[in-house]
Length: 232
Image (cartoon, rainbow, N blue to C red; front, top):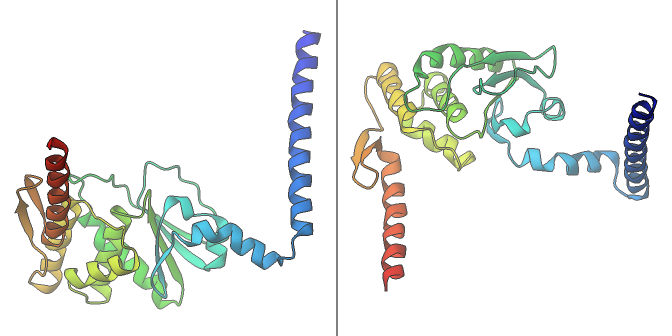
């Protein structure tokens, strides 16, 4: 038993020693750097900043990887909308409103029932001169869908304009086809007509929003060309 205790103490000593060395090396690097503390902080935050998409002065769309206390403080975030129930619920600041949407990224999930409540919350925060950050795992499907719904309801943008508005600022967005179908349904509720329609795409043998149609055709044609060239 004594030997085991000594071994555990030695392992703990090694861990602490390694941490001390790492801390010293970081301190030396910072002390030798001519950068200001603000510049160092900006450099450390740059990977997170590059993943943030500011849709409006009051609304930011991102992925879970960029949600941390430094980002909340830097952008003065007052409200967080999480669309990723598979991630742990870990509020980062007590004075921030947290709104969770329990929805998985599946074409069979019903996201439409969350549109009004979440859009109204974002609008309420915006009206108070504060900012909201919306995220899911990748910032591509669920969170993008919620932001589009908000722009439709409170900025009176038709679906096509709202989608293009968000895509211009975050080109990687791609709400799944089931979510897009519900956005089309929501647009009909709000405006009585539709600017986006579901169409059958032979390339993927399923219904997709017409804004995806050309993209799927291009991808499929490129795949066919690669297959043809490979057979020669």
